[in-house]
Length: 267
Image (tube, rainbow, N blue to C red; front, side, top):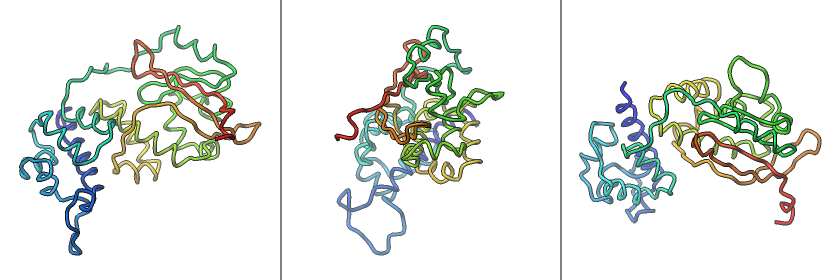
């Protein structure tokens, strides 16, 4: 399957997943006890978006047709996509994007040294597929078995879904795991057919029942900062604020820094 065919297939799957989550009542359509289709029917979505039902069916089937910006805007509006989902829709529909290199870029030495300078705050740098490219000792202690010696680079996604210790460290494991998988979906959508992503996704689907169950939901999410509760090896449950910085010359390489949120108990 070519890159274009794979991208069209992903576009169809994304549209279908979002169509199925919109109820008729949300868009002012009458409810019917005989309705068997989850969410909207293709014909209903096409009508609301002002396009041909046949043309929309072809789009969802992954046929070789191109949607205009106006059509994509109409679909995004009817499907109630947030800004990250809308961006993902446009990417899958073939909007111009910067091409990623076929091979992962090495981490620049000056960037690799940054996490070490941030000690005692846990910090690490991850690549586009969540390989851990650099880290400090505080991060290794906070995320046990993430930085174990291995033939391949440590990977944060494998750790979250396949390492038993992750479910103890991440106090809100399901919330964090779902968000992480949604961010992987977003990144993979920018590189359809890229073997770095397809291999990782296939591995996670094979080994994790949660990934197999959640992947068809087609959730997408951008990388971001925030707060999370982690179980510190010595201090128990601690709320951390974390911030993500994209490296200037490697946009998919991200520096993540954790700092204890001392105000968490007052909110």
